[in-house]
Amino acid sequence: MKIIEKYLTPNEYSRPGTKLKPIKAIVLHWLASPHGTGNGVYNWFESRKDGNNGYGSAHFCVEMDGDIYQYLPQDEMAYHVGSETYTAYGLSLSSYPNNCTIGIEMSHLDWEGQMTEETWTKSVALAGALIQEYGLDVEDITTHNAVVGWKDCPRWFFNHPSELLRFKKDVKRYLMYGNIVIATGDVNVRETPGGEWMKVLREGEKTQQVGILDGWNKIKFPGTSEDEYGYVSGDYLA
Ligand SMILES: [Zn+2]
Image (cartoon, rainbow, N blue to C red; front, side):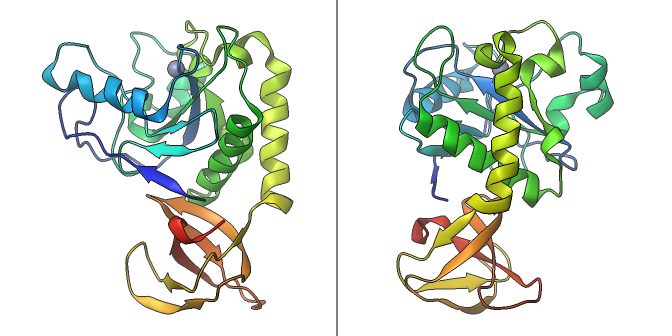
């Protein structure tokens, strides 16, 4: 899983640098702007840095062609679910749910919020890898609406609750059968993201992805029965 890293300039309004508490939920959003792009979302969040466009950001955006952008490190808080009031579910996460959630913005085709197959598939994979990374459950994938109650975000899931169920079913299926990655070249496997070298994954070798951390794919070692894990840069996996 390749992540296009485009981190925001640290600033009070979209990248405050606050460390997240242990992650309790993955929150899905829509862009509320048809045909939005990863760069467009970056520019919007970045434009807030001087205080002229209010507060707001999210960790990820999945584009219509399936490219995944990341705007803040996964251990930093984004401003994606701030509200005056929260639902009982939102408050069960935290009195301030921004401090324990990861936000994913999903691009869409129209004002109904309908997504391309690519956005859907990659959002499923990203949400799946994130819940594995944090030891969460499929039911910990939620929506902006479920946290704050008053916002129809993502609109497609708000108006079609069965589609959210289908999304979660697809995440379950991804975790069972779909999370296979293939090395596109000989690539180093490390103990932690960017950390100690463990071994080389050879070009063409297949393995299972079991997490994602700032562009590093957590993988199982192929051919071992033990639960042995390492991290590989997503740039070298297909
Ligand atoms: Zn939202």
